[in-house]
Length: 284
Ligand code: GUN
Image (cartoon, rainbow, N blue to C red; front, side, top):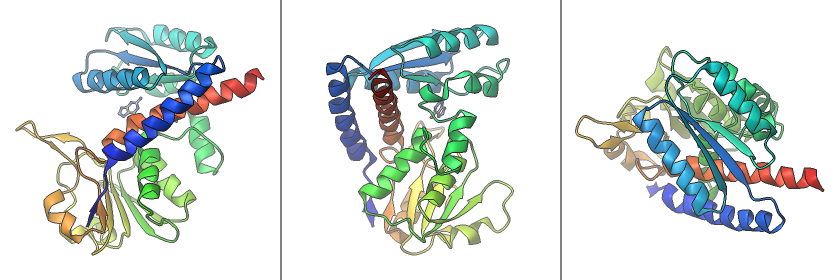
């Protein structure tokens, strides 16, 4: 069994980002990322702080907007309009979830698709599904990078994704399909879930239920990717996979923490670099 080291690979991506950011800056295009946080959700505030810190560490300008939970939807739409028009902003990220009085889809659709470094805009979703160049959501993009780094073949593989969210499950399935896997998406209503999972060469768990994946759901020699970040009552972080029980059956497995988690921010930075490169091309 090989442990997939997301911390090491994310550090490698960040080094690539640093070099690219310096090169772009030297040409007068310093990459910039606007990060919008609405409200005081603690987990979101922690994620956003990490994103802002990572930008600065890699030579990307960070433009933080921390707005109150009472912010009107119209005010948020206006801010996005301003950022869409701002030359120095290559990426716009609106941290989710948003407060209930704000229509998330309306906000995400307001972001210029060319600055949509989260890959949540319908234009980028459609481009991904069509196999066109697109901004791809950071967590599944990071998982594809982990598979590539460890030489894990997707071609012809049976891939099973547990979870159908717009942020992970659906884009993950499309990326694996584009990479020639035979993909099954499963979710809370799926019948015979354990049996379907046990057929997987690559099993991606993104359901948000601690220790959901047990050894009976895993084929001998499978690659298991754990997207879950669940905080237990004792304060410990645990994934969606019962790691200790499942790991001995796997050829590769990601730990929590230190597996998929660190890749999300690294790929956000990479997407911001891509957007800045596009800005440079447009300016020529
Ligand atoms: N909330 C949980 N994951 C994400 C993410 O990848 N991007 C944004 N914007 N919000 C999130």
